[in-house]
Length: 443
Image 1 (tube, rainbow, N blue to C red):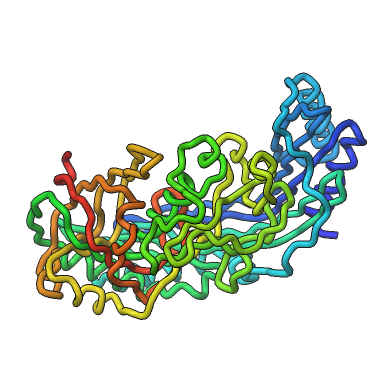
Image 2 (cartoon, rainbow, N blue to C red; image 1 turned 45 degrees about the vertical axis):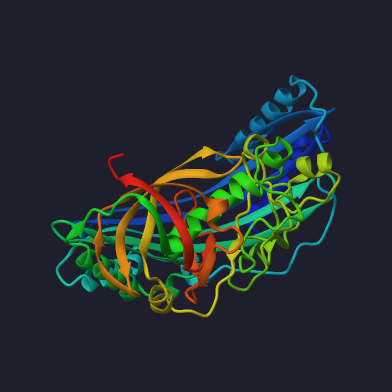
């Protein structure tokens, strides 16, 4: 058996029938190469293993995680967790353990990325920097590989691997910066030259900016902006806990979005990253959130599913007891228009490369305030005519995607950066009919 499976079985055996138990054992690595002023200044890497245990004792729960996995430490860890569970008040909403069920046969891991070296990351950085042709570059290249084994005392067991690679950076002139991003399951699939060229182009085209007046503008949003929108929709809207508490905009079966808007979560998609089960051991599949503009579904874990009388969709992650279940393999449906074609259709509006510092003002309507960043441009008569200073917006993300709001879907879908979840949202560029800008970056 694998090391993580050995750890999971050993931990479960140590519980020794003193309560219901579920175990997630993980082995893997996370490595990061940072660069600034066009030079690598940091290489860090972590290789390790961890065990997470949740014990239920007559409805009393305790959870804990340890990275000390020698036999003596592991035994002490299990004893402490069991003792803590016995001291907790009874939790009437405890749904019990996941039953035995098969998980999808998928493996999104890339072996080369799992074992990527600092030299391989440095080569991507070098290519990114060279693409700037004298501009000042900064950013990072990250690789991650992990293997997880799950077991519980109800007989469920599952295992899976995943890898992820990210190249994210900016090029800077003396007065401007432009961003580029690429992510996916394999480091080899990242075109560092293209990412660097995009960042450099945005930087050079932003050297001279003018202030745009506040107001409502038609917009073309790059995938990074759409990824941030998708994160907020998922966390605040398609979250079954938020929905049950009356804090979500989601109305199941109602046309809340433009008929061209599609959003789903599917770890089984060939392009996806991730494992086919969640931290409770529930199998993952496809969860349709929005189809043809109609809100169809929510992300559930076992606790919210029990309360709603439905089946868990496999979206329990550490912290879900507090924050609710969260979608982590999100796709937003794209179209067949190039970015240039999207821009050509705009009489007067703005192209936005990225959002920054987005914060929710009202979760029920998903009104969010934030800033544009690293490339904002005026569009006039179907052409970009100049760079615009960063702007603040205050906008309901739901209204921005509402019926009749989408005027174009890009053909450039990819894993895009977002404010809180880099590399897990697969999104295209969007042309939207209206976006409300309230002022400059200063207020």
